[in-house]
Amino acid sequence: MSEKLKIAEPPFRHGQAFVLFSSGFRPFFLAAGILASLSVPLWLTMYYGLVVLPALDNPVAWHVHEMLFGYLGAALAGFLLTALPNWTGRAPIVGAKLTGLFLLWLVGRLAMFIPASSTTSITLAILFPVALTAVVWREVLACKNYRNLPVCVLISIFALGQIVFWLGYEGTGPRLGFAAAATLLMLIGGRITPSFTRSWIDKLGKDGQPAPFGVVDKVSLLAGVLAMACWIVAPQQAATGVIFAIAAGLNTLRLGRWCGHSTVSEPLLLALHVGYGWLCVSFAIFSLSILAPRLATEQQALHALGAGAIGQMTLVVMARASLGHTGRALRSDVATALAFLLVFLGAVLRISAGWFPQTPLVMQTSAVLWSGGFAIFVVRYFPIHCFGPR
Picture 1: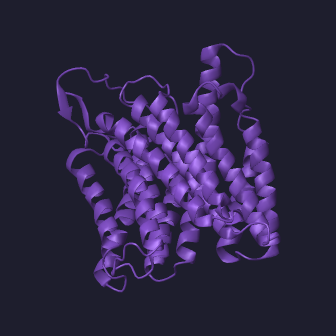
Picture 2 (picture 1 turned 180 degrees about the vertical axis):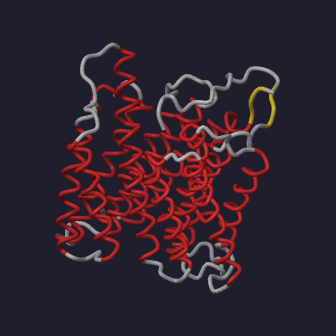
């Protein structure tokens, strides 16, 4: 998504109308925020035995599935359905078609409360990822927009991960999903972060510019993709740990070339750099979890990638797109900045939980902070997503 990716809509003043299904970002970004704000507290109540849901015989698997395929699935859908018309020049998917796709996502969330052995639950759960993947491929191929074929492939891998999960492979499925997500962050995050930063620096008339896409970016992407591929097939091999370490170093170098220091005054930009920084941290922790397991665990690495990189970058993209596509200024207000901060702090505490003697208290605090950040997003952006000019 670039600065040109904007379908302007006048800020709401009078003549309010319900417009939830008039743009792809509206229902999916709102739903993603609601799910993120509710699912983690629900998970904790199940984890501590306060709530028992008979259909969920494996609450840990439910937590992983809903945060990865539920939350991120909605965030990706909102982003892609908004970006595709700009990539392809084709009409956006709105109205009844958008409503139908959203209902498939919602059905997938409800399917998690049907016994996992049920054929019905499996069928309902995979309808949305299959449908979204088909839509993305159709739109890209229809206009021969081959530049974005890598996105199609990654969305397909993401959908495959969810299908594999439901077929009973609760380790391989999430690894496929996380690998696709990490690669999308490197690919799309690597486009928009320096691009938006460059526009910001030009606007302020400052010196210095993010480095253009070049050899460092290509090698960083290659190292990251190779690390995730090795993790899928050989998650405990020393070679995988070494490649993760190389990927962490190269992507940190890549991030350092994007002039992040120039964005300190604008949280809407700074959070993008922080989100990519989380990706580098997750690679480093993956490496430690394999090469020095006494220092870190794979669970910490997954939370650095999930709660940190995915949570931070998707939240800022959702906020930025919601403002830009409704004709509002691309500036962060207090509520938005607070949401970014709470998600950041929640991720820090969740990763650090294993190093504190009072781990349950740290986990609970991290859940309150992280989910609280998304709750603020929901409250702040609810009117933007649901209502607009007639």
